[in-house]
Image 1 (cartoon, rainbow, N blue to C red):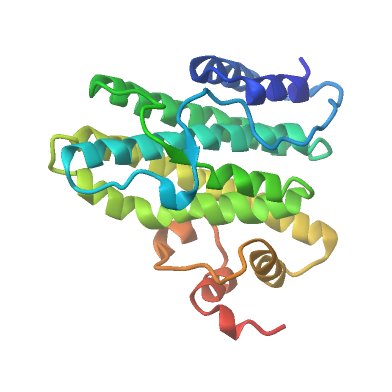
Image 2: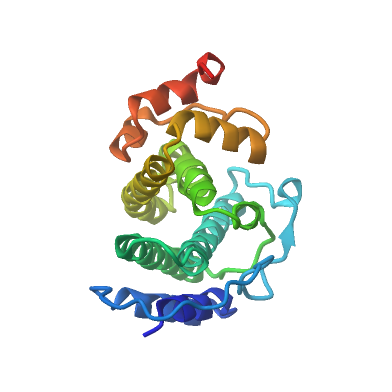
Amino acid sequence: MSLFKDSYSALICKNPEEKVRLTNQLGEVKILNDIGTTFKIKKMPSPGRPQKPRLVNFNGAPKRDKSELGMIKNIHAICHIEFNAINLALDAIYRFQDMPHQYYSDWIQVATEESYHFTLLNQYLEELGYQYGDFDAHNGLWQMAVATDYDVLARMALVPRVLEARGLDVTPSIKKKFSGTKFNQMAEILDVIFEDEIGHVKIGNYWYRHLCSQRKIDPVKTFDQLIKKHIGSNLRGPFNIEARTLSEFSQKELEYLEHPDRLSI
């Protein structure tokens, strides 16, 4: 087995079902005694993805109103997020090849859980008479992967702790929109995703703080610097403090999110 080569193969795979299969193969390796040789690291402006959905800028993404079609577009949008999340986890394995073995075990777990989420959502879309790719989607998630490909610390700071953590903030309100409707099955799928995402953010928090400790830098101040560099403005709430606490954001980090202007430099 060459973990880095195999994760790269899954990452560049364009067929969603085959990408899921290759990702799940990584998950079948329970103990990483030997992760294999390193593999050439390449810039990845775009990972493997099918021709559809057509990617548009954020403002051009389909409007999702409360109509039946609007609800289906919302399901498709979440399906697209989970497809991107597979690629983000695979890239976290492939790109950063000098981390402890536990790091790779953790991110293999994330990748296989994201592939399960995508499969649940795509199957549900098919039950509704649609499939992944039927509506336009935006590319914001992968743009952050490209922006942080220079440093695993930046990746851990901004993908799980910002992008995935935002899912913890908004999923409960999204679930309410589906609960008690003909799309109630979507609410059940969101419960599965929400519980797993707490674990994913927790993994990101662990490795971010591990890297900060290793480099002897302050995690809150460093996070603030990376937010300013890559996002350019403070993160917007409201924040799901309970879920973020479960995913092991520290009290100082939670205080920073609520009051970034009070950070003492």
